[in-house]
Each structure stands twice: as C-alpha cells, then as structure tokens.
Length: 116
Image (cartoon, rainbow, N blue to C red; front, side, top):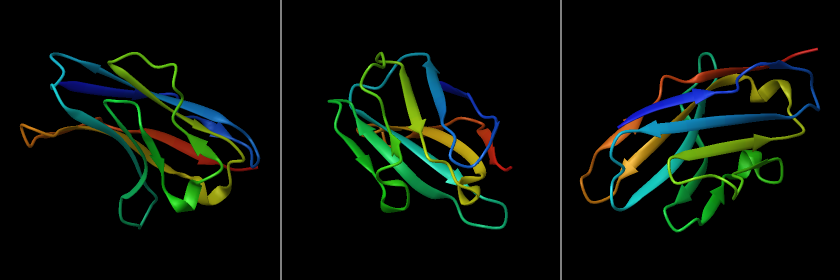
C-alpha cells in the first residue's frame, strides 16, 4: 500500500484547509486511518483517526477545529482543519494501520504553515 498526502499550503491564522490522503494498492481487510503531525523540533503527535467502520476520534489539541469528513471513499481519508493557528504549523502525515497484519503504512507528509 502506498499513501500520498496532498493539500498542504500556507494559510493565515483563522483560515481553513483540507488535507487529503489517498491509498493505492490492496487495502487491508481491517484497518485504521490516522493523521499525525510533526512540528519542527517536536515529536510526532496523533491528531485524528478513523476506523474502517467510519468511527472518528479527534485528539484534544485540535478537537472542535479539526475533523475527518464522512464523504471519503474507501481509499481516501481527508482532514478538515479550521480556525488554524500558528501552532498548527507542521508536517502532516497520514498512516494506514493493517490491524490483522500488523503493518503500518506511511505517507511522506504534506506541509501546513499558518502565518500572517
């Protein structure tokens, strides 16, 4: 499975952005999507996840501002971001966890910069 993220950009504080991650290849039977971000000099942190059944979890630092839209196909997961702040500046990565196989696939990331 290969993952490709897109949608990263430079945006002003308070702005919105939608990231997309598309998987190619044979999808695992049971899987979970995750979005992470890594700011310069900081560890990678989980921001959101989505199960194959469609259940989403948004982590506290971005709760109320970020969401995973429901209108994605099986091979795509988006991250809708609103009310962006400078502290949201980071490289954003998606991952696909093969729950049965134990493998996690990663994209190469897309950069989000929030600056006036």
